[in-house]
Image 1 (cartoon, helix red, strand yellow):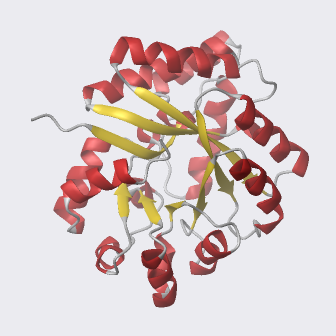
Image 2 (spheres, helix red, strand yellow):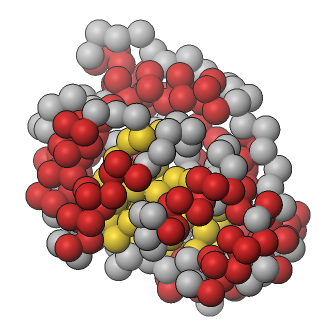
Length: 287
């Protein structure tokens, strides 16, 4: 029987192949992004921003979403929550491309996409308010995300998270990818996260692991993505602590991976049970 998969931690901008990004850049009179080669988070982010600059119109967004949906279908991914960062895309004309593509891929590939709209640590409140308004006004949005420098406290964004939650949206902040366990604790205890993107630094705080397990807060981890920036978290210890885990591709085109590869890798190299990870992705979705 073919596995029916779901994925919860994928950045739309990180699904764009280098070939597509180069074609979009040329169409807008921009230099192509550099090859997807990096060894730390700052190197990754420099490339990521170059790719984002290539995505400006609704047609651009529709193209990259449809291309990723086609790749999803080949892996038997039936549902995915894709994150989008409005601070990296001026204006709002591109939002229509998200809506059109989401409707289109259901018919063409049988793939359902839901959106997480990202707030950004360190960005102005005006920019984060804009992201929230896009989230509240756009079809298919099921939650907010949070990205940015983990050394910057995220508590000032709590009112925006509360407004989103009052409108039925859920919340998955990035925390503990490169920051320490205190960043994960803030996300859980201050922002009241429903899930955590990465969260791997929690392994250094036994009491925090207990909180995550007791409150049934899932960590959406990304083994290959972590490895590409020099991180080698102890996923076995996270799982042994009783914390729910899903594995994800994060930025599949830039990392050079797929969800099916991550499932294979997590089972073979990290001792995680494939069936558990697949069922957890459906259980902890915001659908």
